[in-house]
Image (cartoon, rainbow, N blue to C red; front, side, top):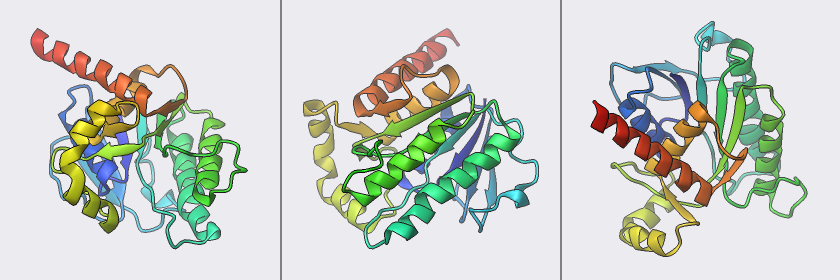
Length: 234
């Protein structure tokens, strides 16, 4: 499977990249970002992109993609609705259109967030804009579109958040997340499980288009079982 990954320098995207590189079913990973991801691997190719509204400079590099894993995202804190719309809705759809033009049979997996407002009419600005983004993606004729709405995410494998407030939380209280996850398994996932669930959906589909945390964890368990079976059969 050929994977296209957006957002590899963020916490979620880094976790997804590590799982892609470890997955024998993934043959090639093309990372598109504003800055280098800082990893070297035989499967990994990188393309730096300064303008995320115009992907014409990539030429034909998006051809033959089997799955686009879109992990770019920003916090709405301190942003106007217009600015958050530009950085969330407009940017995501520009990337999706570019992928669809060259790889219409690709699967598109989008990391959204718990509490997103699919009606687009709620009081929370970020939730409305995320809802508009989700709805627009679901209307695009990819092979499949899967929306991931994780709640609290436990960073694993040395992954760190680039958002200072979030990383301060993880540094101070991260030790409690394994316990909290056992107590609240339907609200908490991890970077590993989110990544494995995305790869599972991209390859084999998922029971519904919008996946909440409990379903993400369910898909991750199925994907982990597949990998374990593969190792035992090798």
